[in-house]
Length: 289
Image 1 (tube, rainbow, N blue to C red):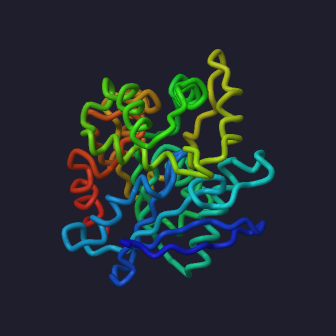
Image 2: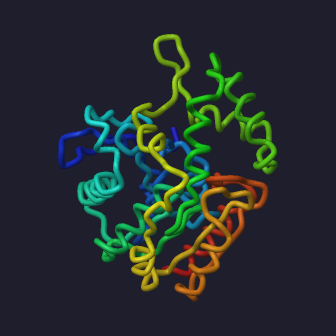
């Protein structure tokens, strides 16, 4: 096992699953990886192992499964699957571990949480990496995520799941190898009572079903503005349908010291151990010591 698994208790008593990588290292500011809306800690497994290694800087790395994802406890009230409560859960984990300043890597929803922390708890942020997310979200991308889970064929084996993911995604994620599509299936599915099921509470999709493409989604420009005082890097998927090029250009204007990278051959949200991204992340983190 490459990590130490344990649980933390949120302020409302819900049990949250957490992983610690490289906790024998002595870096001053650990990396905390936050996943997307339906994703979990396994998205960062390869990246976390790399960052904890000498090549990646001998870092301590923390990941967590939000409530209702991965092996964290599901919430009996699906209305609690909201950013504000999930941001509180992140703070509860940080507090439980007695951590100070952190480098946050936020994929999609994790980046939104990082922006919220920049406004409410800037003292915990050493630096922030936003993975294919910004203060304006393209609603068509969110609808695409919902339709993927609601209308796609239901695989019965991991191998079938890998083939389906490849069939649906190879045009927009050509950087993925056969091995990566297999990993993707394992990140998303688990066996439960002899059946293959997704690793998240399906009630999470409630908020995605309600999106009206005729209405503009609320933006988070004020929250992003709080990041201008914090070293920031943004990674945009080459074929993103969540973070537009126009939004990224505006982010650069508002945060002139922000660095930007492209995840070539990937769609939303990029896997950060693919295509040399982990090396670029390592270089960025080294400048924050």
